[in-house]
Each structure stands twice: as C-alpha cells, then as structure tokens.
Length: 243
Image 1: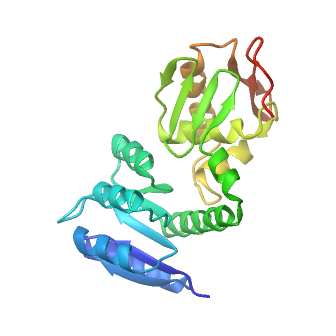
Image 2 (image 1 turned 30 degrees about the horizontal axis):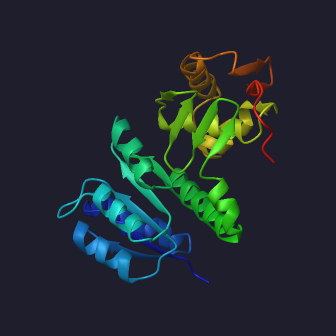
C-alpha cells in the first residue's frame, strides 16, 4: 500500500522539490505551507510520516510537534532545520521528533532518512508494548540513557550531548562490550549515503569520550586499532542484578 507523507513547509521551491522527489519514490504526498493548517491536517488525517519545517507562519514546527505528541499522535516526524541550528535540533528531538535533516540537503540523503525512519516505525509497531516501555530508558551501570528524550546521565550528573554524539553513544550502548566498526557507526548514525569520511566518526567519538570523563572508571569508550570502538561499562558495586 502506498505510504502517505505530509510535508509542512512554507518555502514553495523546497516544498515542490520535496513533493516531486518523494512522489517519484512512490509516496503519496500532501503539502501544507502554514503551521495551523499543517497541524489540523496532521490531527485529522492518517499519515505514515511527517516532514516538518521548524520556522513556519502561524505556528512554529516545535509547537506543532508538541501538540501532536501531547494529543497522543505518534506519527514519525522528521524535522527540517537550518545550518548551525543545534539547539533547535535538540529541542525538536526532546519534543518527540524521530530524526532531523539539515538544509541544504541532497535528494539521496532525504530519501535515505525517510526510508530509515519508516523502517524503524514499522519495527516499533511490531514490538510488544513492554519492549516499547523498556526502550524509554537504557541503564548500564551508572550510565542512564533516555532515547525518547535525547538525555544522558552519568551517576547524578546530566551530560549534554550534541545529537550525533547522542546517537553514537546510543548505538554503542545497545551492544555494550561489542566492537562496532567505523562503517557500522557511519551507516547507523549518518546513513549509507553520507558523503563524509570515517574521520567524522572519530571526531564525534573523541568529543563523546571527553564528556564521559566525569567518571571514566564507570564507563568509557575503547578504541580497537584499525577496527572501531566499544563501550566498556563497569557494573555498580554491590548493585543487585536486574533481570
């Protein structure tokens, strides 16, 4: 069945480009160019995914997102952001966005991100409810990760991470102690079509390491020369085993 996508974007050239390329890919696309109209459409019709600009007339993308999530609408949302709008990205992800894409972007990146979010959403629908709840928090020793909120705590300290740093940590945390190659990380976090090199992974891991230095005995990232990285977690001393 054809998947329905809603594009809420007020820049006419970009909305036409999005609509054309997504339609060519086989999606059924609806476009709204005003915040209030976009919210009404998202609330009253069924879509598989929403592409949401954050800067809109009538109502901001963040307000739309918050209203959708507070009313129980879980349709996957990919936010469209300007360059160097890191705070907006973090706010969007905390408000319930599933992914983001930075303008200007290539068609390949757009299509890859849309397809990836749709795949994740399909997998999420197949999960039992208790697995969904469990995924709202990952606990590894003193490290606490909240995937839905893009928040991390180490012991009693909150750690502020950039979106990609968070996604790298989350990927490593899902398989603690297992070596992940740079290619694994590149494909999982940046996508198969990312044109940057593996140096991007190294830079993000290096920055992430520094932020985890609050308690390096509890959790740290090991480099495996020529291969990749693994997250090493020390269990809490005397902590009861959770099973």
